[in-house]
Length: 240
Image 1: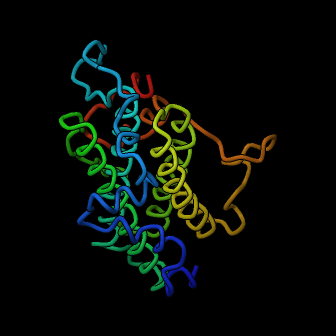
Image 2: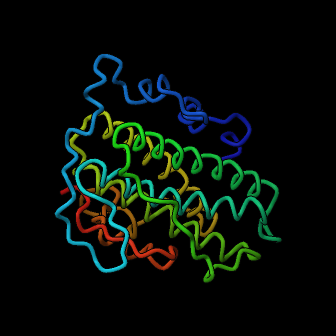
């Protein structure tokens, strides 16, 4: 990990084109879609006017935009968490751990801003609003509780992308989701090893039969994340 911190490594290379301001050219470069802008239009985006949304809930939408809003909601949560850690790191963090969390805070902010730009560009008016995190259950002053929360968010993020990828209809978005989840998996592995060395890919997150990271459906991910978000989210139409 020290190599990643000092050199920037692959994660920095991943993030480089996405640093704000996110320009149209950068988005195309990341999407690998320079040959056909229309391929990036949300052709798989269904009209969600007929959705049945739980009372008082924020619908994430349907089709590709629903998946993007779903990812955007989770990235908002992660970005807010790491921004809080960066602003007020646990007193018992090592210098290396502080630097690591600073770096991850930048990654997650980039993921959030990238998804926001993509949705606003391709599905104007369909982006969800900024969410308000609820971190009352997290003691940010202690290393152990911060790491436990980071593990929860990172494992959940990986399982979320793995579970939602099959719902994306636009190939370029699937490419981007695959790149983002690879970064999230690196975060998850590092945090897990900080908590328990060698647990970076144990049976709790990797299916012992397939050898693949486990996946969760959007409704299950949102149910797990809901306690950390003040607004009630409805993911029942994501990918439909």
